[in-house]
Amino acid sequence: MIDVIVVGAGPTGLLLAAELRLHGVRVVVVEREPAPTGQARALGLHARSVEVLDQRGLLERFLPLGQKYAVGGFFAGINKPWPERLDTAHPYVLGIPQDVTERLLAERAAELGVEFRRGLEVVGLSQDAAGVSVEVTPTGARATAGASPASGDPAGTAPVGDGAPLRARYVVGCDGGRSTVRKLLGVGFPGEPARTETLLGEVRVAVTPEELAAVVGEARESCVRFGAMPLGDGMYRLIVPADGLAADRSAPPTLDELKQRVRAIAGTDFGAHSPRWLSRFGDATRLAERYRTGRVLLAGDAAHIHPPTGGMGLNLGLQDAFNLGWKLAAEVAGWAPDGLLDSYHAERHPVAAAVLDNTRAQTELLSSEPGARAVRRLVAELMDFDEVNRYLIEKITALQVRYDFGDGHPLLGRRMRDLGLKRGRLYALLHAGRGLLLDQTGRLSVAGWADRVDHVADLSEELPAPAVLLRPDGHVAWAGDDQADLRAHLPRWFGAPAPTPTAA
Image (cartoon, rainbow, N blue to C red; front, side):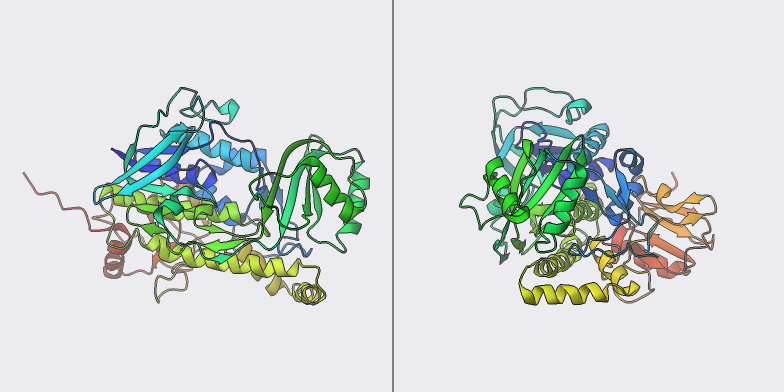
């Protein structure tokens, strides 16, 4: 039997698969598309997502293919300077197209031994006490078991996917906002339907960059939802409000439709031609009622959708996967304490709810209505205060996320930034995805949990605690210097201690 089936080969599913495989879990990724689409809906990774990559030793793969940005405009497009003193070793946004992120994560998953079965669509789901049965059907004449790195699919091509049912101990739906897994589960998806729609196109233009920038700057004075972003190689991403909601939201716009709307806003269509990709998106905002139904879980857009304002969608999904991976792996391995897997919903559902509220607020500030524009001007004034500016950016970049672990040390529940140590740095110790006791006292012990938790005695001028116990996702599970107190907290996250070997 397969340990875990991950439905969906987007960034969330790929990172989750790699996290599970890091712990020896047998993972099969099922994806309806026969090959990567090459589309780049998202264009950047926020600071917490960059930290996630760094914690697993992956960041060096991403940095040469991206661009670091420390510029304003991420909150509702209000152009204020990037705040200082962010609590991270990575105080920037890494500009990198989604298709590149997917390729790099797919390569990582393949290296770890994740199995890919492309060209299969999930059409049925049933579960019992022992596992989950998944019905699939081929979506094309040829499916692939991965692909070569050059093609953006990591493991070579081979015909697979004859539609035979699959069986797994657990299933995770990472299959997007129209998630089939969520619908088959009957999980409610309450929220607000789309009220407005935005057209997006990656096209070439027939004007100079200077002319385009001047026209866009003038047009944005009256329509902040309009924009043009250079993508390199002569391509631009045009974003423009649609004229109402399309009858078929899943159908991409035509080039003529895009150009008509650009002319209506900017007075010119810039001679747009040769579209590489055309799409539309709305401002629907919805949150799944639950992230777990027995042996089936949801992550990423399958669990939450919201407008792309602030660029939080892909990042929220990656952080879901990072929270879930080690917990589900512990469940498969058999050492997970009671409630560990349920803590995924308890921790991540409130984070998504806060992101939805954040994007709701930003969307209101993008309105052209007089009242909304007045509030936007007021918020822009408030962002001149560094504390306000930093607070809003830390919400977008997820640096302020703190899980509720109860009362205790001020660090409890927070993610730990990368710290400089006497013999290196903290994140270099987290690559294996295990727990970590960072011990400045040199007298503590993880005896009984050494198969799940590493113990490093080292010093850091940046750590305001004698010792900290970190979960595999880098959040502080305990801080202090008392061995008995540490032993009382270890079982909450790492299960019962291993039996003490008896003498022969």
